[in-house]
Amino acid sequence: MSPILEYRDVSKVFFKGKTQVHALSHVTAEVGDGELLAIVGPSGCGKSTLLNLTAGLMQPGTGEVCYRGRPVDGVNTHVSYVTQKDNLLPWRTVAENVALPLGLGGRRMSKAERAERVAHYVRMVGLEGFEEHYPSELSGGMRKRAQLARSLVYEPDVLLMDEPFGALDAQLKLVLQAELLRTWEGTGKTLVFVTHDLTEAISLADRVIVMSARPGRIRAVEHIDLPRPRDVFGIRFAPGFGDYFDRLWSALRADLHQGQEI
Amino acid sequence: MTEIAARPETPAPAKDGADDEVFLVDPSIRARRRENILVAVVRVAIAVVGLLAWEFASGRIISEFWISSPSAVWAALVRFVENGQLMPAVQATVVETAVGFVVGAVAGMLVGLVFGISPLVARILDPYFTALNSIPRVALIPLFILWFGIGFETKVVFAATLVFFPVMLNTFAGARDVDRDLIDVIRVMGATRLDAVRRIFVPSALVWVFAGLRMSVPFALIGAVIAEMFTSNAGLGYLISISANQYDTGGSFAALLVTTVLGLLLTFVVSVLERRALRWRPAVD
Ligand SMILES: Nc1ncnc2c1ncn2[C@@H]1O[C@H](COP(=O)(O)OP(=O)(O)OP(=O)(O)O)[C@@H](O)[C@H]1O
Ligand SMILES: [Mg+2]
Image 1: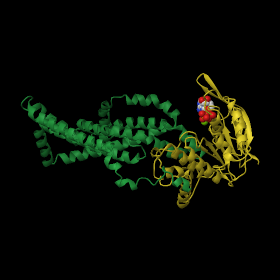
Image 2 (image 1 turned 135 degrees about the vertical axis):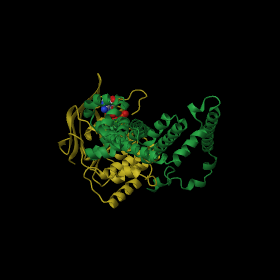
Image 3 (image 1 turned 45 degrees about the horizontal axis):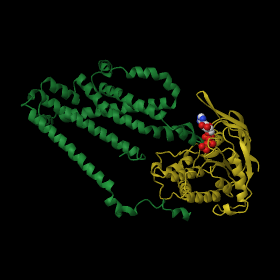
Image 4 (image 1 turned 90 degrees about the horizontal axis):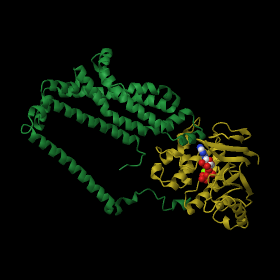
């Protein structure tokens, strides 16, 4: 697998008035073409910042982020990005939101094809019947699912997801994880996702990166050699799962203060 | 995805619920209906009591010469209609108001949007617009008469100057208020600058724009009426001032009443348009 994304000694400091926040410190990593990479780490360690850098919405302080060997300067339109915040356009219905990327830039597509694609992805995230609803009329989880559909609909090479299932209940999370895996497996797309949920990271990913508390560095990298296609409902009972969990948990725990959440 | 389709959260939206008893017995719905009735009744009662008190006071407590009376106002109204003064006046005022409103609003929206999109331009021009906005607008009418004559144009231009600033400032605030994250999101999706303006700036600013528009409907009317009072040749403003000049208090009140109703109607029209354009907003009440 040749790397599609490379982080070369990336550091990032934010200045807020006089105070400085050291968000990332000397992060070096590669993401292989077609890989499913999970990133876990304590809150505030710079996970979202890493994705923002990948999408080209920010520039690194030092070091560089490369996409297919070329440094990302300016917005990286080869990726699609499900941000941590709700980012549906409130004045568009679910269907119109999902259709949004299909009408941007130079993308041209027949009306019929567009409608079909939108319907397909709306169905996939389980929002059929809600196509004409506005975001304000949806639950938090439904909004997340609509965002997921919107980021999949234009089928970019790399998907960045910042805690896509964070706000969902446990059952729905499993269902959507399964759906995501089914969509991803065999497409050759690269998927980088941030999560707070170690089980989710191990169930889905080829590789899990654990980051340290701020300033974020890479504390541990774990290859998950569980067989594919995976069954997210049963994989937690697969042999080896517990060992991965223990190793990642001890790497993560090193940075957790009493009572802090991941 | 049958697992998802079967979830309680995702049934087809409540088509089945029309005869569900929750719609009949929900106390919040009944309380709401009761409140609506109360509001309507009290409103009508205030109007009736007000008119009766006015009718009673007129001639008994205060001379009818000063305050006229509802019956006299009604008589004046009938007189205006019968002698054919009212309709041409209403028509003139409505056309001036509408054209002035559209001109001022379009100019205000354009300038506001440019300012919102380009903070640099806004910063450069800010003191000039602040200065212009602080000119007492009525003081411009003599100049406008000099420039545009006493016809249609002066009234339109004057109404437009009153409409321009609230719309411009609101559009500006709206465009500045745009969620930058939304812009980032669609840029990653490959949006051009024009896409960002069309898909994010304009719809997002629309909430503010409509607030500005609703606010400036009365301004457009006020502008047209004031200009008519100055130029004295047509419209409701002319009718108001000529009646007052002839000590016809009833006529003055009648023309004023028609103007007020007109203002309410125009505001209503804009509100309806607003509700249509902003359907996506959660209901406020
Ligand atoms: N645009 C910004 N301006 C200033 N500081 C920022 C900005 N973005 C992030 N930070 C700071 O950088 C640090 C890392 O933020 P980041 O959002 O990357 O954390 P995170 O790992 O995604 O946390 P969480 O898991 O809670 O989402 C935080 O302390 C945050 O306050
Ligand atoms: Mg984050």
